[in-house]
Image (cartoon, rainbow, N blue to C red; front, top):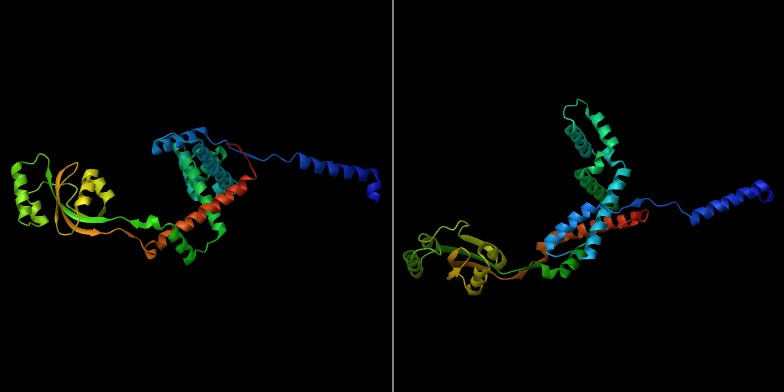
Length: 307
């Protein structure tokens, strides 16, 4: 009670109250992160625009900027944790960069490393930046622990993605090829052999050379199209009805083909056993990505973000 009655006590109480009021009304400013490097954003936007063949939407541009902020945060936080002092790969690169800048200088590695750190060369090295971000991501995932992915989780994911596991009809075939400028005599010899029931090997003796080969195993229509062109792929698929028969001539971007159908594997859905490992890998990757994003979202609360 004497404290409250004394002048000095009242000064202390008033001072403490003003201090707390100041902190509540005028908190310490947060460190600023961003805006992202305009050149990096521009290069990524240009590359994505070319890939999709259209101008980017505002949402896509914002997503690029947010990704840059995310990587910048991971980079900064890794540096604050002494990453440069701990990673030998980064240190060797910094030393190599220093020697490249002055190859005639005779200085030991520790000195060069010290100078590189003092010059903050790591800030301008894209390779070091990428490695730093990747290592920080690994540390975040490792700190989360090993997630449990049950058989039930895999079954649920399999059911959700079942349409993605559709395997298209696949054709195995052998062909005989003739160029468009082949002589009538050569064409007649080939047709005669086919009429006599010649095997694919016998028929090829009077055909032209086809550099991509003659036997093709388990190819989908899309894969056949990539090799021979759309016209060939869809014409062949529409006419290949049974095994052990010739289909042709079928026209391609190269010339004329007579195709012997070896096998037709009907369309099917891959079994759970076939895709279980892929599902487990995909789920784990999604969990890792979510763990990193949760960490980023939480840590960004400590910063003033400028896009």
